Length: 272
Ligand SMILES: [Zn+2]
Image (cartoon, rainbow, N blue to C red; front, side):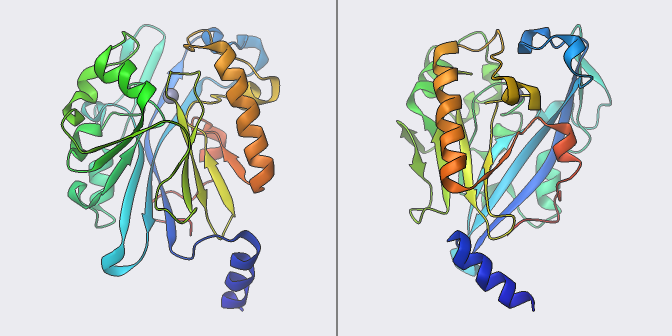
């Protein structure tokens, strides 16, 4: 029965048969006050943001290529119990990404490509472990983080990649050249923010949101946090993303959505 289902699913979605997506628990952030996200504290009881990391495996056997998308909280916080990097924010991170990767048989050197939705500290926390990988980054994010070193970034987390091979991007990018995995340029949260479209057989195409939205309410009400670098660009990116989701029939996984995370299969399980 199962292979019939698979064949039908592939025909329906056009997904590549050889794409796997792993989701890792790379910690959580809890806020006393969520006003900065453009949401009144009374509007939702949600205070905790999940922090995921993702590994995409493309191809099989010797042809397998691996893309890491987002690298979670700072690796130094792993296993430390609750940490308070600034008043009103609590960081929890149980097991470092690199250790979780090892448990599925993947060493940092086995990762061929890295891309981050953006360079904020909760998305690049283990970046330094992946210096040998090719770094896929929007030119605007590269300029803001690596060149201008804007104060919103904790640059020490990603400057170890300064000499890594690099693909500087200017817009959407088909990562493996077959349409199965695509970086989607969605500027506004930061100058070169991007999401990732992964065409899976089951549950079908999925878009990993980056920080396009932090809460479900952010999407429903199109709220723009006060700390976004460009509110106008954010609104245009929201329109672009929603149109893409419609066109692809894709699901949106809001990365920081704790309630969603509780329903996802986490590594070592995977989606395909
Ligand atoms: Zn974030």
